[in-house]
Length: 246
Image (cartoon, rainbow, N blue to C red; front, side):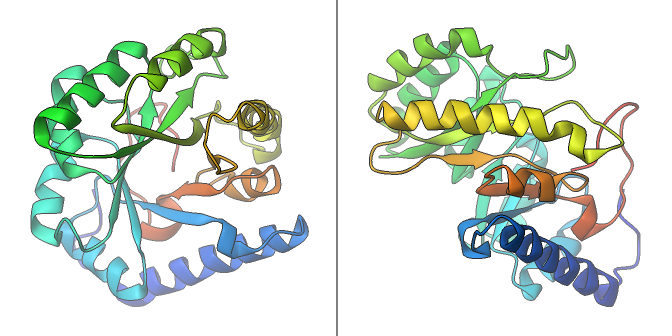
């Protein structure tokens, strides 16, 4: 878990450094950093650290687990920041997710889409922005929809009047050399471009949620519009064996 004593200065320096790295990466590929949303991943970090981050200007927070996020949202405030669910969503947690989150990045099946749409109607939620998580690495420990199953999910979304498709998300395999993740980011961008031509995102180009602490600069170079950065902002936390840093 996070350190017991909050070092606000260190947090401020890390956050400033990440923002500078985002700006530099955007400049390298002739983009504006204004086109890139920084989602600070706060899982396993306590509320006092989150509040310190908000004081520094964090506007988007990402959580992996509904149960953990629920307590934090209750303490920090539902309207204090834009809350993103970036982890796998189990069907039995879907109702709470509809109530808690502004954006869900991990839509990965027709069944989940239909359940979320039904729950939005039941809870009186007019619109729920979602991204489809695409499985490009084929790793057993990670979720996402097989790209070959994507057309069926897109058809189902046309009948989900409460879900608004923002774009695509992916979580590539972890590489010591972050440039090795580039082909995965490029593949997601090319897939997004195909769907954009089909009008899948309405009048929007379609967001790309890709890139974490160790590879977000590569993701930006390949077109990321949302980067999910945890460790590089909030510092190290205890991780499960084999788990990559955000």
